[in-house]
Amino acid sequence: MLLVKKYLALTYLVTLFFLPEVAKFIPFSKNTTVQIQFEHTVYNDVLKLDTAKYFNAVGQPFSITKFKYYIGNIILQNSNGTSYRHRKYYLINEEDEMSKSITLHDIPASDYTGMSITIGIDSIDNCNGVQSGALDPVHGMFWSWNSGYIFLKLEGTSAECSTPMQFFEYHIGGFTADNNCIRTTSLQFVKPAKLKTKTRLSIILETAVDKILNKPNSIDFSVLPTITDRKNAKLMADNYKDVFTVKELRYEGR
Amino acid sequence: MKAGKVMITISVMAVLNVCAASFVNEHILLPSKKLKLEIPSEFPKPYYLFYNNSISLEKFNLGKKLFYDPILSSDSSTSCASCHHPAEAFADRGHPLSEGVGHRLGIRNTPSLQNLIWKDNLMWDGGINHIEFQPLSPLTNKDEMNENLENLLIKLRRNPEYKAMFKSAFEDTVINSEMTLKSISIFLGLLISANSDYDKYVRKEKSFSQEQQRGLNLFINKCSHCHTPPLFTNNTFELNGLPYACNTLDSGRARITGAPQDYYKFKVPSLRNVSVTSPWMHDGRFNTLESVLDHYADLPSSTTSGNPGLQSIGPISNDDKKDIIEFLKTLTDTVFLQDQRFTMDHELLKKN
Image: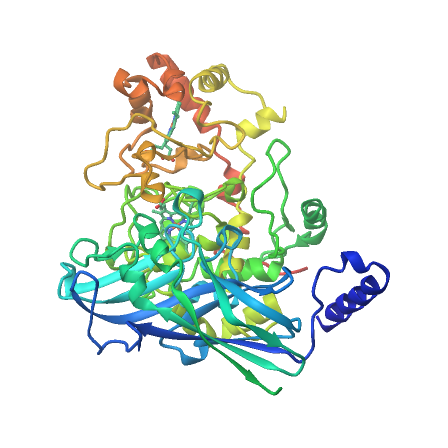
């Protein structure tokens, strides 16, 4: 792995000296760290599972018992139009504090003007057989009877649900053309994020859980208490399209 | 690029000789057999080529042990083989609908398991897109094994025999879902049936009786649109004219796609070994092959119009029915049905 990076760095240097005009990609840098932290909020307050009571856009009370989702394909955009892409998937789970912070190492040092982040798993990883790590089916984010990953799970209770135990259950996923639930949020940083060697950049992202229920498609618990297959899933995918906002950029070790 | 390479290495890789001992007191050495992926000459290229899951004897043995082990079910009552019996081409003779833990009935008939690597998707509704994901479905289905993966892994990790087997199969001391599912896939993927009398006839090793020959001709004209040789399925979803089953309320392919045109369509089943897999159809509604043929002979025009496959069937006389059934019986592969590599009748396969 390290060798590959060295090799790439070398290639870059060679290219830089002999073919300056094609040297458009960014070299890997050592000792840079980008940490992305996810803060889950409901109407700007920190999400509290089980006990906190909220109201949706149509005035129905609800509590949230579970919130987890897959993110991937993180792209950091550079001011000169190039970008760095990180292809790994991560499962972010409200119940697991560790999962809400992901760390990327040896990211090219550069001035980054923005980023994009995707909720979902692309079709290849939905169809290519079993994997370990974040995509291990043991995490309960896989439909066993209709192969494919559940991209996002949002569960809770509302007095308006006609279901047993007044449970609502939204399991959203789908990777085929007609029910594609993969959604990307593009974000601009207010000021460019300057990533230098021996620096750790923390990007604090806010995930607005209320938006997933309300905007643009307002979910009525009495009408649609469950989405557990691909039907209606896009309603909610469109709601999580821009669910992230940049709350803060923090630097350490400059 | 990768495809070609793997094709070549598979055949070299897994020529594993087997010496097996009988499970009764005396040890009988069976003639050595090979465990390897052999693509029958008439068959197309499989969909599953064991990429990222190379075939080994250790993985096969582990997959086989898992297949026969009721530890996979929540109450240790039901193994894969409780529903999939080797002598019945891994189908479940006599049970219209599957029966899982607590004798709970499922909604569908247990299909035979053979030539699975030639399927682009699995199940009557095609809901499963990859053989490695397949075991998750029976494992977690409430009406089948009613277990979850997490719990199964805990049980396997506690079990010394499995610990040793996983270690020798994957050269690793962990036991995880990927290893578990991949080893079952090795077992499933090597269930290949291509040694029926029909295959021998095609390979010119055997001749057909007059009835069988006539049955074959009729079958090609009437049935091969959907049950296309050599796999005897075209791997598509079709309406074959059955009236909707009110007991199972099964929407078929539409359960997966939600598409209006997919309602009540089912995967065309392979007819290999069909004579040992009664009852037939997705809900096991027919108990005899005669009643299957009666069904196709009596299709109302409302079902055939707009369905080119069903239109190709045309009239079927009583003699036609008999001869088609004679032909269907030639699809029975006794070598496969009795293949001791796939049964629990003897010890796990051993290297010579």
